[in-house]
Structure formats: C-alpha cells, structure tokens
Length: 60
Image 1 (cartoon, rainbow, N blue to C red):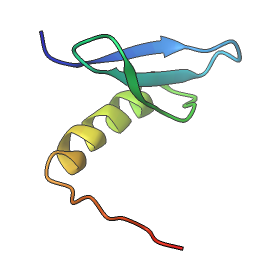
Image 2 (cartoon, rainbow, N blue to C red; image 1 turned 90 degrees about the horizontal axis):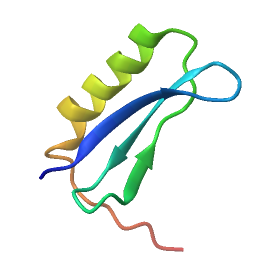
Image 3 (tube, rainbow, N blue to C red; image 1 turned 135 degrees about the vertical axis):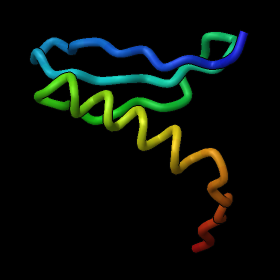
C-alpha cells in the first residue's frame, strides 16, 4: 500500500488534510480551509509541487 491523503473536518468546522505514509504515520498536516474545494486544491498542489522538490538544509 502506498501513502494516502485523508480529508476531514476539524473541531472548528474547517476542512483539513493530512498525508499518511504507507505505515500509517502522519507526515504532513494542512492548514484549515473554509471550503472543501480549497482543501482539495491544497492536496493537488502538494501532489504537483512536492514530488520533485529538492531537500535544502538550513544551517544556523
């Protein structure tokens, strides 16, 4: 099984999504969205933009 996005409503009634790894561990959580369509757009943005993103180490 691969990872998955879970779409849900929080206690404030806002839509959020979380990305879970194949082992069930949560690896990312979104901000709250007023509209379900906005949360779905957020998921699509992560799918499009994160796949080939470089890893950048920030040093102090």
